Image 1 (cartoon, chains in turn red, green):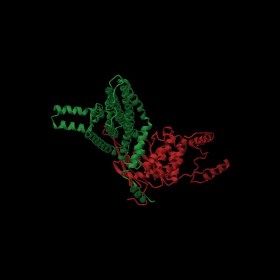
Image 2 (tube, one colour):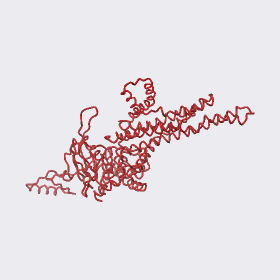
Image 3 (tube, one colour):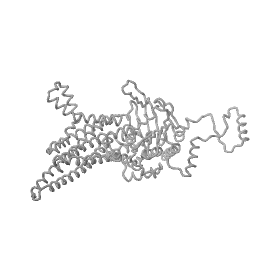
Image 4 (tube, helix red, strand yellow):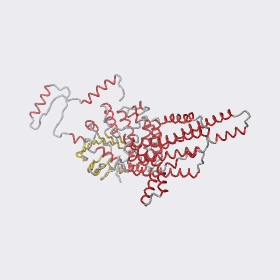
Length: 293
Length: 305
C-alpha cells in the first residue's frame, strides 16, 4: 500500500527480453533497471536509439509486460488499468484519427477518461487555449502540421487531468519554434506540479526543463541524478560581465595570476545558440505576418 | 491530496467495465469509417439494382422480380461482407501502425473494451449500410411491382373484371415487396457480423491490414465450402479414423459455416423460412461472435504493443 511519500514512478529491477521470431536469439531491451521519480519532478530519460527508453516507457504504461521486476505509478502496479487514470502519454511521432477535428479528438479521449460532457467541454476549451490551437479546433487533424499534431497530442495526454505525463520524443520532427512551444508547455506542466517523464535526443532541451536525468545505455541505467549535480564542473567558476573594458579584463587576469591556486582558462564573448538565433529571426519575421506552425 | 489517498481514489473510481467507454470507441470507429466516405458504395449498389431492373425487362414479371431480388440480396451480401472484413481489417492494424492504439490503451481502458468497442462500431456500420441498401432495394421493388401492375392493367381487354385485376395484383405483389424479405436482410446482417468477428480475431495477431484481409477472406471462402466438403466426406464414409473425424469437426467449429446464412436464394424463390431456422442463425451468430471475441481478447490481452 502506498504511503504519503510514494514516488510518482517506481521502477525496480526491470528486465525485458524480446525473442526474435523464428530464431533462438534474444534481445535484452532492459536489463535490471531501477529508477524513481518523485512527485512534481521533471525527469529526463536520455540515451541513444535502441537503448531501451521507449521500452521502459511502454512497461511503465502497461503496453508490454516485463520478464522481471516491477513498475508502479503512484503506488499502483503499472499492469493495473486503474494506474492509467493518473497518466497522460504522448508517443513518438503519433498519428491521431485524421478524420476527427481537434475538439472531437479531445472529446473522444475525454470520454475514455470518464469525463462528463460538461467537463469535456470546459477541459477542451482550457487545453486548446493552452496548446494554442483554439483557432484550429474545428479543423480535421488531417490538415494539421507536425507541430500542431504534437500539441494536440499533448492536449489529449492532459485531458484526463493526469498527475504524471510521459512524453516520448515530444519534439521529434518539429521545427525549432514548435519545439520551443512544447518546451514551454513542459515548463507549464512543471509549474502546475505535474510529474513529467521526458525522453528526447535534444539534450539542450532536456537540460532546460529537467530536474533529474537518467542516462540509459544498452538497457542499463548508467548514470542518474539531479541535473545540476551532474552537469556542474565543481572546480570551475563562470563569471559573465556586461560591457567590460579591456583594462578591467587585464586587471582580473592579473589578479588571477597572482593566486597560486587559481588559473584563468578562457576569456571571450559568450555565444548565443543557433536555436536562439533562429527563434529571434522567426519572431521578427512573424511580427510582419507569419503563420501558425 | 497525498499519494496514498490519490492512488486509493484512483482504484475506487476505476470501473472494470464501462459501457460509456465502449460506446465512445464504437462511436469513434463508426465516425471514422463514415468519414472515409465508405457510403459512396451506395451509388454502385443503386446502379446495380437499377441496371438489373432495366436489363431484364423482356422477361416475365415473375422472372424479372426474382432477378431483381436475387441481384439485390447478392449485392447486399457481398457489400456487407466486404465492409465487415475490410472495415475491421482497417481498424486495429492501422491503430497499431499509427501508434494511436498507445494513446487509447494508456487511458484507463481495458483491452477487451477496446476490442468490444471496435466490433460494435463495425457492426453499427454494417447495420446502417444494410438498412440503407434495404431501403433502396425495397423502394425499387415497390416501384417496379406497381409499374408491372400498371403495364398488366393497360394490356388487359377493356371488359376485364375487377376480379381479374385483383388476381393479377395478388400474383404480382406476392412476388414483390413482402415482409418475409426482412428475414433475408437479417440473415445478410448476421453473416456479415460473423465475418467481422473473424476479421477481428485475425487482426489481433496480424501484422498488417493486407494480411488481415487475405486471411479473413480465406476463412470466409473456406466457411462457404466447408459444409459441402464435410457433407461429402461424411456421407461417403471417407472419414474412417477418430482423428479424421475430430479434424473435420474442428474445421466445422473453427471456420464458421457461412453457407447456412445463405437463406436468400430460397426466399427469392418463394420458399418460407421457418422461424426455427432464423432462431438457429441468431444463435449461431451469437455463438461465433462470443467465441471469436473471447479468443481475440485472449490473444490481444497478451499482445506486446
